[in-house]
Image (cartoon, rainbow, N blue to C red; front, side, top):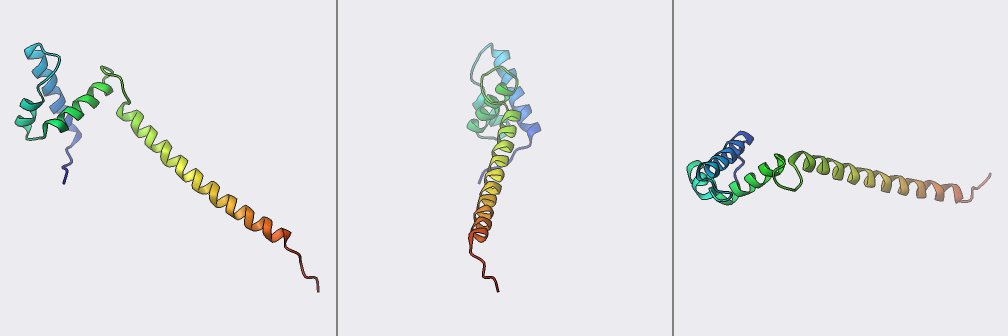
Length: 105
């Protein structure tokens, strides 16, 4: 089961990796050391750091805000497609009702 970490902890962890790299004048690494300090998995930290760099504009990719917007738009598209399908079904039903011959008494 995966743990949910608060955004503040992820932010702090990313800053620690950046500090680790700056202190050692390195452009990579630091995940194992910082992850051990914080008792998190190094791969989790690697993913947080990658997204942190994207959000900061240091790396190319989709920012967290852009991803949220994309998710919202995808949800809206699903809802609109569902509504359109309902409207098509209703339209077909009423069209069939109008085409049906009437018995006049």
